[in-house]
Length: 137
Image (cartoon, rainbow, N blue to C red; front, side, top):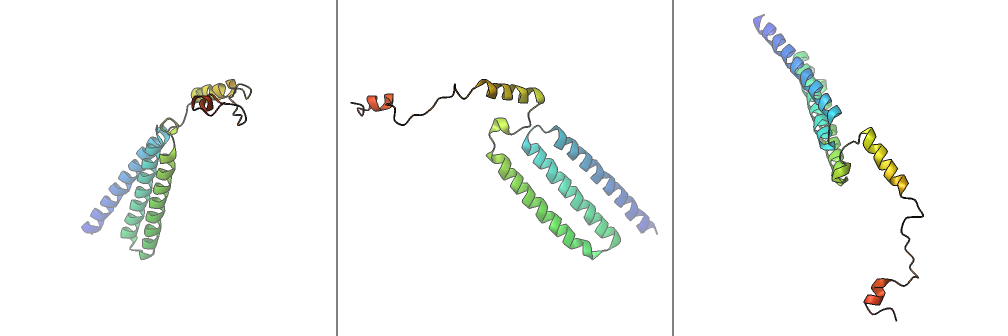
């Protein structure tokens, strides 16, 4: 009877700590500031869900949850690798989510550059490079 009570206390403490870890990871996911912070917090959430399933498997003795653990681990790994690959392609200044003010400034800068002001490449026009290289006669 004492062993059962001890196991119950350990399980309650373990589930409580896993819950705190999920809450901290969700706060980190919300705050960011970079994509890598969000990916790391997603990994923490995945691992805590795995831990919760493992605790439930240990407590109930259900062996049918073991394949669920394996699938969750593989999905977490593949998701992390895919997100890391996606985030690695981004430029450093695009690796974070912009605030509303920054988005407004970026959109205003894009609109300020009109199509008429954009440089146009004319392949038939003589270039200064051709004259410098001796190609323009």
